[in-house]
Image (cartoon, rainbow, N blue to C red; front, side, top):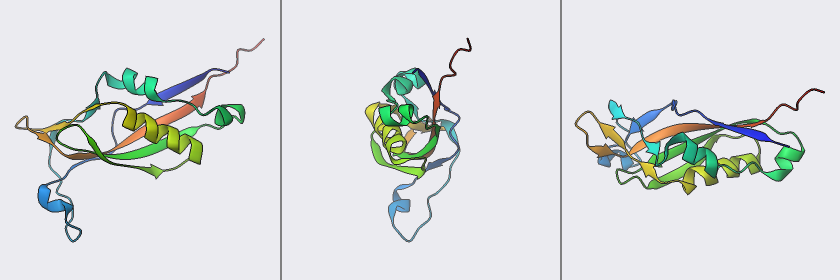
Length: 132
């Protein structure tokens, strides 16, 4: 059984976080990004990192997992969580893929790398079977 993984790089949210926003009593600051964070090697590299769980394939489970990532100004993932789950095995596969690739950090209008929080949708879809 073949499958298709779709990664939509039009991230839903981008919230660069200032150093002071890490305090629990403050809201994150939102600034304009000139460049969104992206995986090294682009969407193709991220797509290669996604492994469709065998049981989910066998049971025909499909869906879109939304992964919330906070990417430091160094490109390191400092926090990763599922913000919209589908099923535990698909959720874990999406998290594992996001963590498996290296990231290029977001940049502000001055070209400075900044810590950014994004929502990354990863779509698990089984390929259509050819009709006889």
